[in-house]
Image (cartoon, rainbow, N blue to C red):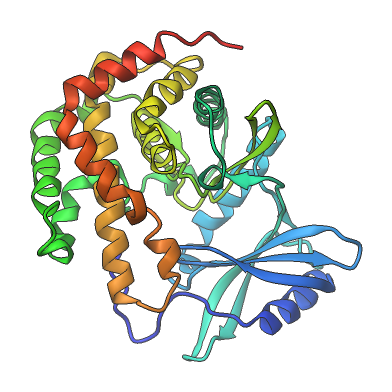
Length: 359
């Protein structure tokens, strides 16, 4: 999380640099280019002379050092695409490589960045779309299907998914304490501290009973693409950003999906049951996982609020709107959930989940 180094690891290519890079590596002549939001990396939307759309993704220089991890992530995207999950795939360079390490000067010294040209998935993000509970059921189902498909993936470098150092993992919620000072003076700081303490006493002892496998790790409302199908409903048409793929607990994926889908929903309490029902149509949570779901959702909300504020303060000019996107409704949501309490929220989620049938 803390990249307080002399050179900022985040790439800041100009549109011209990105255009030139695309031509050099892929032989693609860009007719149209614009920037897309990103937390740590840099993404460009581009259209070539034939009208084909792509996303050019430039990884930050710190993550770019993990070449093997990036190779396995790129393979996972292709694997999922082949298994019916709407994931982006990498376009080969002119020399046949799925990724290229490029030394680029973004104005603060040359650094090496991993560059990939990805296929474009049409649609809008969940954050931009009014989702019905039926839509959210299908989101939960697709996320579970994706994780179940990943159980079949075989790679000689699969050990790279053992990533215990990822601060965003829900097993690392206590690490929020290292950054809690950014909330000084905020009345919700005490709530965040209480969530951490309850996580330590009520969730940590159960971690060993949680089912594990390779999970996406960041199924947020900006990383799930949907397309309208009429009557106010949507189909899930894309899963983006596999940079947090890791061997972790399946219930973490459920909690992350619920939390971010609640942010933009006019009726946030209706989200949990719908996502849970969709998930459990593919994989069932055990008793300990269900009992931990409320605190895991709150834990992810606390991570997002604290780390978002920390990063916005540390790099005030970098993607601030995107980094703080959770904060817009997140503080109100945290206060609401905390006030209602675990028993009331989980009762509603589990009762709602039992009303769904698979169609």
